[in-house]
Length: 102
Ligand SMILES: [Zn+2]
Image (cartoon, rainbow, N blue to C red; front, side, top):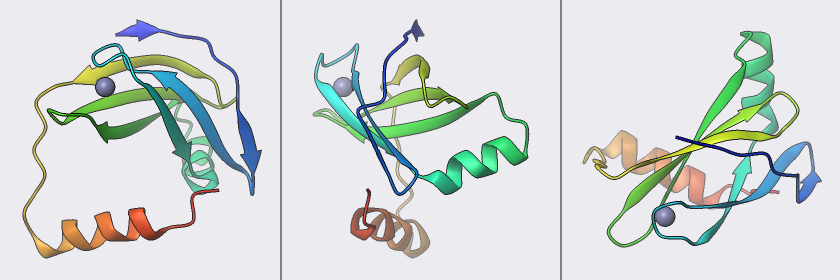
């Protein structure tokens, strides 16, 4: 796990857009964290919201730990990724892709 301190790129509609560097593929990755996810974390006293971003070839996951001040405190990489092959998962992934991110 890599500790990081970065800054917010943009905030609109209370959503957070940030740029983080993936330690595995070295690409700069834009992550979008929804305001409702932050609200849930605050209400449940979760110190750092865990946000996962899938990308790359081969596919891997970037795990970002985002605190209440919208700072990414740490990032980690998961190289072993499996996605369930069921209609509920596929439907939820389509909802994520079609959602207006900012
Ligand atoms: Zn990567």
